[in-house]
Structure formats: C-alpha cells, structure tokens
Length: 74
Image (cartoon, rainbow, N blue to C red; front, top):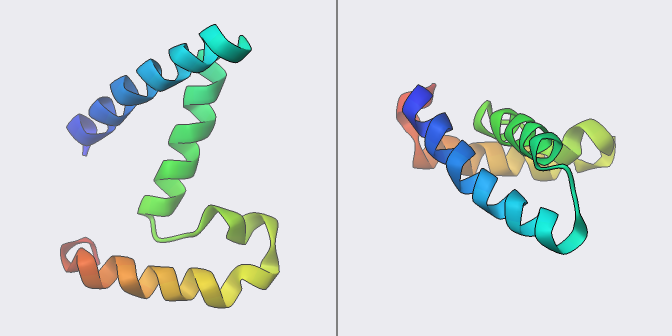
C-alpha cells in the first residue's frame, strides 16, 4: 500500500505542478486534498457522500462495483 501511495503521490505532484504553473495553486495543498479524497474512495466511500447525503444510493452502488472488482480488500 505504501508503494501504491508513493506512486500516486508522484503522479499527483506532476499534475499539481502543472496546475501550479497554469493557475498558481499551492501543489502541496492540492496533493493533500487529492490524497485524502483518494484514500476515502479506496476505503469504499464516495467523496461526495460526505458533502451530499442524497448521494447515498449512488455511493452504495459504487461500493458494490468496487468490491466486486477487488474482492481481496474486504
């Protein structure tokens, strides 16, 4: 999992550095937010679920799809 996260982080650093060149975003903050969202999704939550409670059905549907794709996580 550490290697996976490190890989993600490097990919993200590239993306956010490009964004920083374009929109002058702080790439560390962008990385923090993106990794947090990614970790929540990996745990089986849809990020929007925390923002909109109406998303409950859709996020449940995504969870089933995710766990059917990767049954070893359960």
